[in-house]
Length: 244
Image 1: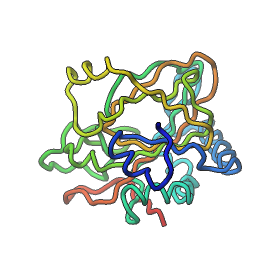
Image 2: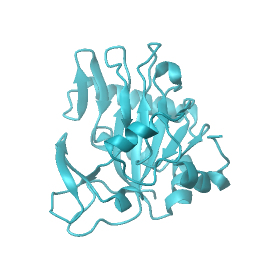
Image 3: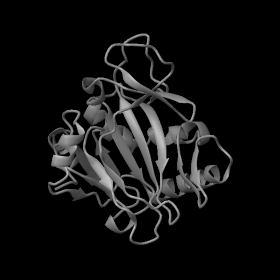
Image 4: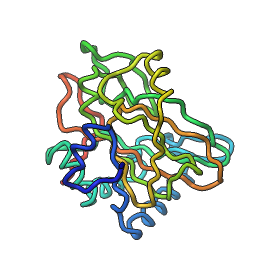
């Protein structure tokens, strides 16, 4: 079972690394953010991820669609994030992902390993520094990444037909080598079918992947990351949007 009642959410997430909340956002809320995001995708933003078919992603989403900070504070999101990591949680990154007929590739099994920070500082355990759309990113120690919570907000029905996320339950407790990932991906996976307005909560270290679309349907997802702790100084989170 992947969809659970709220009072079991935290325990289920701890055991399996993910949980689905299928009925979270009202249709008016979804429609509003679809419209705002469509406007941003048509603009010439440095955060746009594009190819010849158009924009299929937006990094640093709160920079180009400031209203997304309101979505962070939606009661359905606040309640679930608070249950899992507490009332002092804050959003540390927001990204839009979509699959389109012109950007319809699969994503191999992987773990999310990086966070966004203000400025690069050499700190023990933090490595693999990169810059993405002008933002400094780094891979923190596993004990830091294990405390981050991802919330994926679905602006469309998401199924296997349009490239829904696939996950391997219970693989969220440690960082894995390429050999370990190869061994794990031979196990049975779960396809996370999530209806429009639904949420998928997961730990970033959970092994996940997605297949190309079989049908040319939109699969717009807002990917939030939350934390409730400070980074070792002088490192600071790039984004810090409170729940309240």
